[in-house]
Image (cartoon, rainbow, N blue to C red; front, side, top):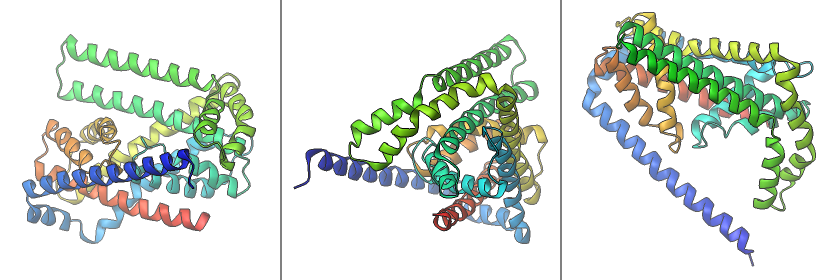
Length: 333
């Protein structure tokens, strides 16, 4: 007979699966309502203007991934793996981050696992994944602050209230950065291994993590003190990578015949980042991203049909790369 823990885990898994399907259905219904309100024919007409140039939409994200790979390489203590391996591992991991409601963290262990399959020690792979994710998060916060600053400078209030808001965001960014670094110096992997042992007492994967947790924690705690230049370089590379999304927006808007200023593209891409976190429980933030993105587009004066067309093109690009990432995952395994 199944043990109580096994029955509990199975029941929790079934409830999580049902909840995810329900939330995905709600997100899809929300997206359908947005498309219906904007007018399917009008959206098809705008999207049809891109025509044979549609593959160009994939280019900015690919370039951004290449830049992010450089940020990832900067975190390795020894000779980093090849860029091509990291590029494929990142696409595979990001596909899972986009398709699973795991706060954009579900693909991170997969990246370390894939590197291990190609001879990268788990200690190196796991520590680099954690450090790169931290650098990505810090750079994302900086990018959001930049977008908010551009909005205040171009359209928002110039009085002391707008500057005070930016000051608060900067202070919050400094706090998050400090907490991330302190967290990495407090043996987080060992704590995770202990939690895994309590939840899955017979797991072989947890056992492997336990044996390497102390060394991974040591590498995390030493990184910022022994290699500060590498830490800064990783953040700067990832910060540059965020601009690929703004390039993508500018390109889409130009292809559909509605070019916008570069500052507006940065504002839309930057302010859209927090929106995705509002849909953490929905795979891919389906519907939530489009609804929040439309609100941001309205702030910069974009018509609803134009804004939604651009967001749907971004969604199409995400689907293409997610499918490609899943295929890579199957081949790399």
